[in-house]
Image (cartoon, rainbow, N blue to C red; front, side):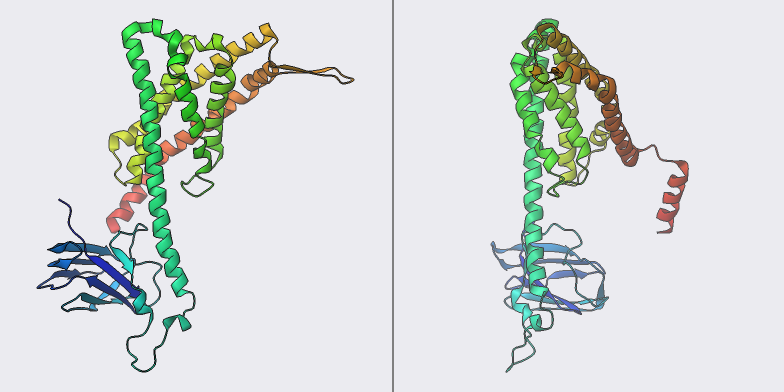
Length: 372
């Protein structure tokens, strides 16, 4: 059963944080104020009527516990929390995500110490209101980004799991006889999923994820080229066994990768899932590159036999442009560097996440942790 939280409103000046708990008829509240935390629990009348309400605030910076006070009235509970170091906080909480029950107290922008003359704090700090509004928008943007990425990763996981299930059921039923029908069974789904993966090239551009553009561009661009140019337009390749192994390898990588991303979004990483994410590529990536190379090489032979994908230009030099020549150049000069770039990227990521780490760095980390 989830704990009910009252609506909490906050504001600040250079010296204090003002917190208002929208809870009526509070009797004997259980309140704990620590250096970086405020805990509140009490029975009272809130948005859900008479109930037990509680919340915890992890402050953005240290507070002065001795100077912090609170006052219980019939309609609310007011806190005046003294900052240990004077100055404006960028936000109230230590984490960027804001709970739904926490709101900005816009009434506190005006001084309550003056009866006849009302002073607006924005006269002294003209950009404060805009900064707080941006902060509020930043919380909403962060929530939208998290929801979008969660739905995206879930959709892609379900899509690639569908491919794995279809191919597995077909293989268990018919064995190797199922290989010729692989592309007919899941080819359109694979093309659709990889077209959606183009969004992963744009995610870093919009700041949704951290990282560069080169690695997703190489990986997704290479897969789309293999799927659409090599397989979609060459039915003779679609019935080869290599298509089954390629689709299973690609899907095996993705049904590990997307759940790992979802676990990171909710900040609950699983040790086994993390290990698989940074280990499975050691087997899957080489198999995938070999399968892609076989498909490109076989298609190169078909193109030369049929003289397809050829453009003749009427010029004084009688130029003829052949895709088969481009594929030869790719196999000879570009495929191995591309494979090296992707594998190097994954090796560095694995080293940072799960090791191996150098003994010297490990000793330094242990000493720092011990002194802390």
